[in-house]
Length: 389
Image 1 (spheres, rainbow, N blue to C red):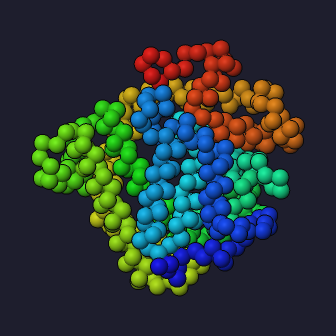
Image 2: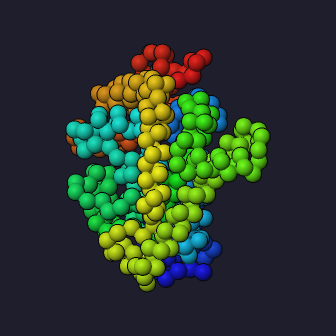
């Protein structure tokens, strides 16, 4: 049953370029389909989540992560009576703005772009779906609904202070009310992101042998899950034991969000999606106890995975790739692909050119960035070798 506070696809706030809506698909379903068919979504297949793609076919990429987030988000949205299509659209698009090489790539690009307005992957996602995707005859971007764009811009909460330029440019044309919270659907997508990466980073870290099952069994939630599996299936094959335990961790997090959010919504009693935005607080949330548990899990992952010596070695090498590519294109924009040169000719100043270069690099996959670096610098040393990058 659809809740009063769910986003209603029959009463949308429109698209920047008016279109006749589909007879067969709701506006939010149409948004989701356009996202799935976009070039940026396909490129997520070869963009890193934590490990560079060359380390093995079993580690998550941005694409598999986005699909997992969407699956969790649909489950939570359904349990809370929210619009599943809007939730899924935001979940599938939330990582479109990530550059190659995960957070290492973003940190490097943000530093290089500091004189030109910086780089923010959430703002870049909005820029991609409003400007950089160029396939439709009537408009640049995907011309998504206001509700989907709002969810992309502020699924992590209101955006205040100095706006990232990529977001400010669009917001000046199509006010996304950045000072308010997003819809409940977008809030679900944000927490589903937390659930997915906390769970699959434990799994990928184990597969990479950065830590052991016994070590993570000392963590909250995780330890109880392993204990339950051992009680129900004594002597289980280690790989099955791990899977059974981590899927229970997944279930605990999802169940907590559903239970806690139901209580928050019952207390707030919003009667429309608009009321959710103006409550002044999120209505989709973890319980205090589970949030504290997740802090411990994240601290463990930060120390043992995100800053592990093996991963830091990769960070150093990919930092070099992005650091070399950016000034190369800035000083020799004629080396950009032909389809980008019209934009180069129209760049008014160095800032406009730098933002164009940033757009191009941010759209690269890990593999293409490595190939371009080797081609342009004549230095193949940073390409994957027998030991992996």
